[in-house]
Length: 352
Image (cartoon, rainbow, N blue to C red; front, side, top):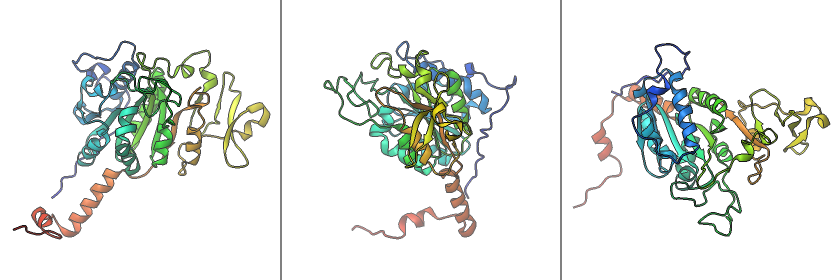
């Protein structure tokens, strides 16, 4: 007979004296990232947020691939695994399906997840496995010291592209939406409040939640996201998405997003078209068309018109839940199976 394990309760709980603290999630390992790396801010935000889940540390798992970001499990006082280059989603899938009592998180980088690990990522997304994937995007290969990555902008000069990259950059949010992901969001390492809000929403979601985090590599790609961080210009470049709210931005909220007569979206000045013409963001729309269009607004070189926030958050049964229901249905109708009969039945033959 199969054993049905309880699902973890991911309902965020109010603070109390019984809850763990951020300190409880800090391991005894020395954190070995370069001074000033954006990974420190993300680590601190995650450690500060996890107590809100109300879960025991032994019911939380972090699985990583290879890269600077993939050292993450060492620094978390939970279970974890530093796995194989690009294969973290595959390993985490097996864990999530077989252990529904665990909260499973994947930590990966733009090179790890979008190059050698691209296939594993898109299939985890389309299956809607109950994983929370944190994709650290610094637009460079940091661990191997400065080669261009799948998210490096065209023309990027690096050690491996001395004349400038000829590749068109991957857009992780567009990729996830194209793979029919049920939860897709983007945030920034230095915006602790926004990062934590997105993590809360991702944790509460059933299925795969992809969170792209713009993260600074101050050694090999310093300032890659500066137009979105500099207080003098960020309000003119950042589009903060909020479900149900008009999509407006700018220092005086003077700019907005409209849909044109040919079905596309574009940036306008609100006083020229009127407030009623501005699109209201719908993160729960079944059709990902608007979310995808929003993901294409940003200029990959200048970073103008860059949306952050939750692009899509819809309900669909998770893959692991469907697997368990399928197994339970078979057991209920046919009884427990005979593994040996399965292995030796069907298309088998004996070699003499």
